[in-house]
Amino acid sequence: DTEVTQTPKHLVMGMTNKKSLKCEQHMGHRAMYWYKQKAKKPPELMFVYSYEKLSINESVPSRFSPECPNSSLLNLHLHALQPEDSALYLCASSPKGVRSSYNSPLHFGNGTRLTVT
Amino acid sequence: AQTVTQSQPEMSVQEAETVTLSCTYDTSESDYYLFWYKQPPSRQMILVIRQEAYKQQNATENRFSVNFQKAAKSFSLKISDSQLGDAAMYFCAFGQGGSEKLVFGKGMKLTVNP
Image (cartoon, each protein chain N blue to C red):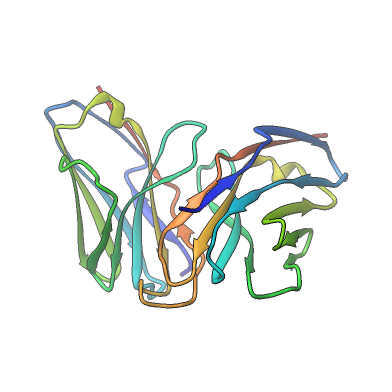
């Protein structure tokens, strides 16, 4: 299994809703990432989990709450979002954790297209 | 701070022809890695090719090869025998050794004409 699976593919939510994005990989990777990508822009890093611990938070607003229940799963809980949060949310994984001196390529999922109304 | 620059927002190429995508970067680090990622309309970011800074030999992957000029901080991607499936956004990315953060360029849209 060489895939990173993200669900749902599309999500429309109101500003008062609570929803979650889910990411799953079974490649034994120990680092998992959330990226946000606006149209025609590069991905922007949001969070990194290494060995199930949050290692990087790129000053993301608290209305985004990541969770890593185990080494295969990564969630992103959403609450009280704003319309400007509408974007493609990409999950990625890599074999090595943050202390590795070897930069492993990222394996990306297909993303969740989020629309906040 | 590291920066990655892709100066051409769009390019087009005829099917079966060769195209070169440019990328420059700026860093004071000696231990780093460079990547080219492709993002087709399916949205998934796919690794095309990877280059370690300490390696002098340019990386190649089938029809894809890089021209890595370390002194000039240049990392261009050459696509030979272009195919319709090569049409996508291409992002150049920089990764510092030991860091899990990638710095992406702004991307370049490649169109392949039949």
